[in-house]
Length: 440
Image (cartoon, rainbow, N blue to C red; front, side, top):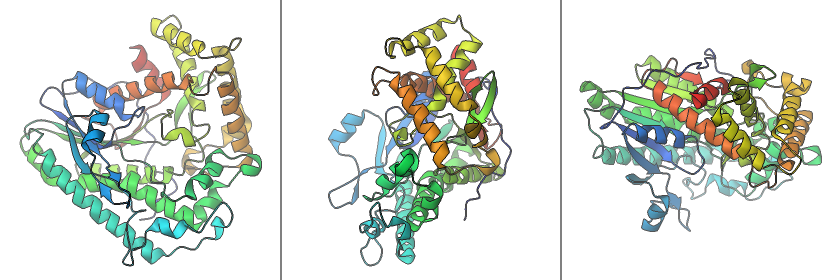
């Protein structure tokens, strides 16, 4: 189905931490998707372990030299350090699947470079064959995963699935150079995200994002139906949580206001993710997408400027509890990463000037989300991001790492408390609640 340009359900931001959840020893958290460093799910895993839950890990697998999908080797399993892990590759998407003639979608992109990509014409029947085969492979492996999972869970205890699948850039050489111009470009290096999205390569990306980020939740809900009925038949609960992004509120001046990074092209798939959770809720399934604040992760580094609205979290914490030891320690840690003569007040001033800029203020619109970029908007975001980074001693040691950890730890606690009885099928976690939970 075609994803609408905005989510048609109400905006619902959580304002308070839900009561202590009914989870404890004997219950299980299953991570549906591979866990990497500096990711949102780490906060949820920490909360589950604190409560005594068993955590079951999974992997998306790896591709061999012939691009065949395989499980992790023993050395790779040791390096991951996650146990127990169900070593069945859950890679989603179809960019490397073969059509009837042995051709992959990425093969069609080999002839294109940074010039001429706008006029690319792809073989869509071939791509559809690959897409359907990707779905078949994914669903087959999920069934194998569930069969093994049954050996690890108590059917009389609660079970939580954490959907972490995201991304979906086709693994073709031309895609990332285009994406770098779209997400990082300004001046002569600027590419319009709308032009890219309307191109046939952009349409391929949209289909790929949708299959990886959103439809994987549908497959998980569908194929765990029998397991869910067995557990619920014993009086226990099965819950599903997923990580979304749909903008969030940050402190602009003295008021929390909704802001969204642009261009967030994966947002179209995130809207579909919300729709799937909404339909599941209507069908009586306990499912919730948590729209979380921006953090800087290994995978988000392509999005220049996504980190800018992390800095206002310092402002929110200082406003709420300026004398708190937690706040003082954070400010000291952040200050230690800045060059001599630079201060956290300089960071705050630059960030607030950016958020008060008339172009920045009028750009994000919830009703029009997700939005494309514009040359002036990208120039402002790039300049702000560069100015903030330049105040640091090292571009590889930014205070956004410390702020990101605060966000994902708070989000993990909020999600763990909320998922037993979510207020809505899609909820927003904003900086006000992150602040409240961090200072509690």
